[in-house]
Image (cartoon, rainbow, N blue to C red; front, side, top):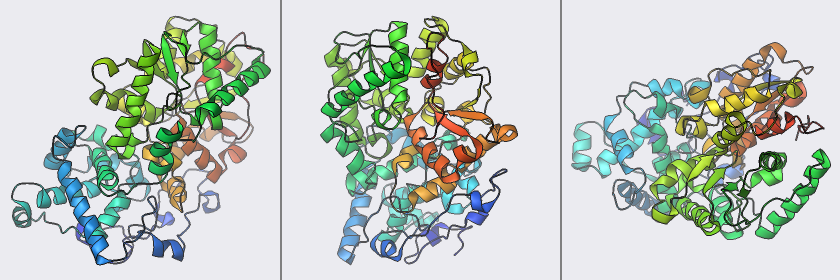
Length: 538
């Protein structure tokens, strides 16, 4: 089956892969990436992987769940799924999102406005299974058949019945990992239906009830973070060693000598970075330290396990794991006696510790929290604590990628633009931008999911709209003679861009680099003698 048009009955059939992905049907990219040999490759799974894992959706594996060997195993998993489904609609079991989920189940008009807003659906050449309403309609039918009053009888009378089988549930499991949770669909819905929420709630069933989750999010993410101190595996001792090394590197690069404030009780601000920055992009926490030190900000970092890592992968798949990490962050802030938490450049951490954490932070745990973007805007644009010279960045053409959770979920749109204009005379906007931006392709955990052929799917399809935006905004200067910088103030987005840039050779072919915002700010500081931004591929 080619899979352009797929019905829910097709989805529920018992055997065989549902669709075959055809990159030739994806929306073509602009020049010079209209040539097939410059496009990322979508490699098929090995026969061994096909035999071992459930991959009967589209031949792509995100979860790596072993195929059940017996009918009893299959039936047990079906029963666990249905038990989890019922809990989604019980107040005592779904303290986060039951009400908006209920409204989404009841009021979708199927106008397909959301479909036109979904980059994965449109970039795939409008493949039915990637339509936002497709997975929602499956859950809606399950809800009407197994949860809602009247059950199977009423559902059958209205044509909304569905039979829960292991084969259907296995496809639905993988389908819940074909959405970046960018929430463009929710934003465009005229009646507020949230198909992205459906994705999130499905993942909860698989994780919390069935023990099924992508290893990169659970085993190597939340579990490792709580056990070791960071999703990277970085312990407190390793973190302190890193800090000592970076202090020396800052002095070497800028001539500035200072000690990072660690575990400083009573500071105004607890700054929390995505721990991945210290390992993959250390210039980002270095730039933060330079700015805050020069601006005279009273702040501290925490050396307590979890306190130096703003990551909270539970926000993507599991409420229990989310709550465990979020409460650790609040407890550490309370212990240090800081006035507020400021989140570094990490979009999903913004979402987890501000918007979603509001549902569990009560009384003494309700520590004020703020985005680094608004915080930096206050001290650098409004208060003008530093002398900034945008001409120091005149050799670089700059554009801005808006992290979905920062702009669409939190409404932070202008502060980062005013900061960019203060440090760059050659800033140009992508289209669309702000709250209508396209996801980097790495949302909902995709940036860190590296198993089997999933990275190929992410680079070929999930990030395709963002790649098109980057090529479009620099279309007149794509030759390597012009330095071009994609400012992406989000660790997760940078991870996705890193892999996509490598897959398409954007730096080598077009001299396009990516990085954070604070690096550009330090590069524009009038009293920093040498350029801070190093023009190289990492």
